[in-house]
Image (cartoon, protein in one colour):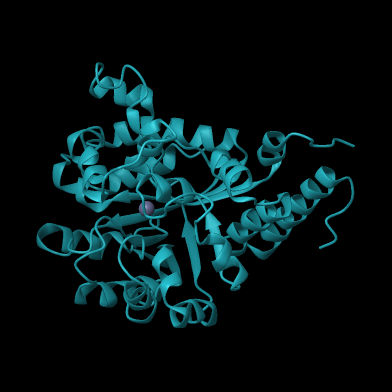
Length: 338
Ligand SMILES: [Zn+2]
């Protein structure tokens, strides 16, 4: 029986999910090079492990300056996603939830739905893929409002997400649209509590009605919000390396993910924007093991949490839970024992 003495082999063998990924922040380096051969001749400085963004604005500015310029056609989305999806599959990622940005519709010369179709066309058969439509908190205006109303009904769209700056507070339209999305049987998410506050996380859950909070870090500041996350069975889709590089947490070791897990909250890990952080899905698992003392059992728990919240049949989930137990059993030389 194979025995994984090497942590890297063990992480590679784990079937995994990625449930917090922005497609525009995932542009592969080789395609960024086509945008600006000089700037991206070498990996950008923000790929260095010790790099820190001064603030969220510095991070967001890279999208406006470079990456949104790639995502101007269905063909370009396809080319980028093809590479991104293949690399995830190569890391044994079997389930993916990724978002594309509503705002790109303003620069398109073809119907927006063509983009959604191109992204799906890039997904290989071995990957269970769910596409989310992401947008800023103030995006419900002008042509985008009508487009959003229409797009939420498309088969290609599994759900919606709010991203970008976490202020201003959620606007009134979001609760109404988010409720409509859920009535269509789809999933609603929101970024909250990366830099904002525990109160912002509370509003995402209570006012918007989401059960999937992206980041949610600051909830740790208010025990009543932590309790509410548990009671309402909210999942936190966390991205530790992104959080460190954006200085939302001081270090991997001080990341609150462990506290949330101890409090009984379902936490998953993902990469957020690999082009901006130089990270990989396996690297997130390795980072928690090497820098935050996560055991192999903890890593299996994280992968398992991703399947628990995934939009998969019960049978499919059981299959992945069993594979996770087997991988841990092979690692420790005996069965995981449940
Ligand atoms: Zn994000």
